[in-house]
Picture 1 (cartoon, rainbow, N blue to C red):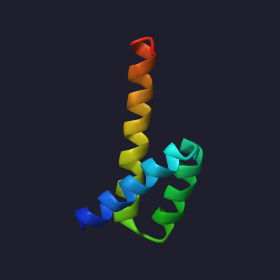
Picture 2: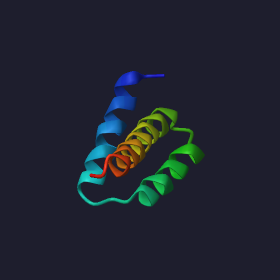
Picture 3: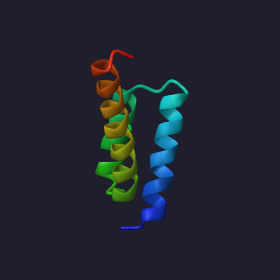
Picture 4: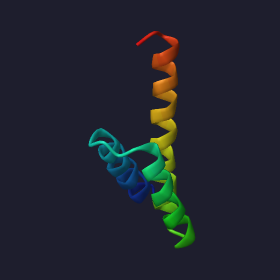
Length: 64
């Protein structure tokens, strides 16, 4: 697996979230990349989704 491509999609997904994309929209894109077997894209997007979910839960627990 090409880690450069994974990181590229990771940063693109984080940028999409920053610009207002929802987790649901990213999950829909993830399904498309799974169908087309673009696994580096899947890995990067999934990493961003999981990080955002974790950060959100952590912030809720900490009262932020």
